[in-house]
Length: 489
Image (tube, rainbow, N blue to C red; front, side):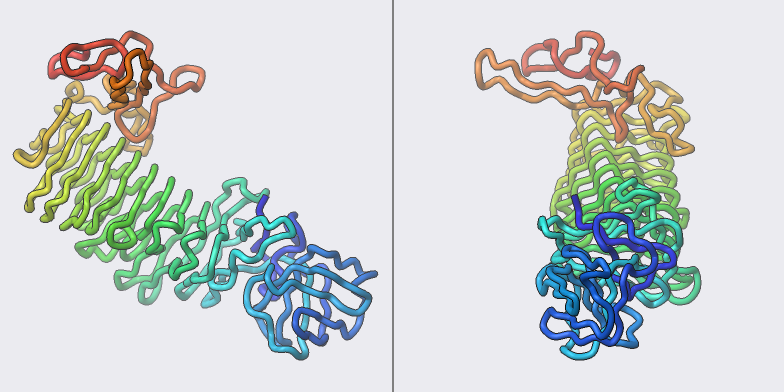
């Protein structure tokens, strides 16, 4: 289990952040003022750490008197009636210069507030317990963490930052609010060589000023992870990331400037987005996913109801993969490709009720491979342009859904669960395995789109009738159904 630290309402950033694995109170368990610190040993001016109850494995904050934020937290390794010894390696921050210091055992931190980013920019992966478990800072959602200045985290991981409601890891969301006045700023930036092992989980990031184009949250490494985070009301890009899983952006790109999106890859040739949804960026230039680099993957992602395009690929320098993505209700193209020559692979994707083309290469020579993709028809069609733009794609089973139908339960209100028979168990999923005679092979039955349907009883969607695939010379049973243009086979 992780080495647990805690931020909560009423805490103090002079505390140690934790005493042990349980949620700490807002006050320190023990405080020793005016002692002497020298090379890992704190000598108390009064009190008796041994009889007071200080224990090996507790966490201590050691700081210069008069400080408002601790600069050093370390694990207790020994204690006597007059001294407390702390580790110089199982720690966060930098030990104070030898001399007079104060010490606190335990107690929750207050967390970020105003221009104070703490514990971002302070906490590090070396704050491990006696078993060497990696550390986690838990942010209780009993308060909104209102900040007024950018937070930058550059310290080495691995370390987790995670919101919670009652119990550590319960997936409650902590909210960081940057305010709605002044010049925009980035709420949180993960940068530097050490952040590739840090994870930010279960946070709501919102508001970052009134003017300018600053992004919401940023990580330029593909090894730092945003997991289950939501970003809204941002002047620039909502989330700039190398790796994002189950994240959401909403009402971003508020400066309405070209080249911004709800999500954007963090650097050249890096980016993976899994089960991310980008929606209702309402400005006329608001884009769900904006990508000017390539070598990116979009897996089970949704772009819906945005002011411009669903996905916008601008002068790609490397290829892109889109698997199981939904594009719905965007004002212009579901996918727009501008310039560049790198290929884009699309599989099991839906293009429904967008204002322009399902897929439009307006310039450049990029080739799009569309495999088993569904297009809206009739009132669910993509504007007056039902098919992808001519000459820029090669397709294998690019088909139309029945007229005036969508494959989802309630996309207007964000419910993209599959409920249309033509999309159930019909996605590309067969493995080609013919090299070994008698080899049984492997077959899967995915739906077309980002969200798999569930049968009665909560199970996944398996095929209920014999299905077929083309083996190169004949149709044989064993894989998902395919649309021939007039019938499912």
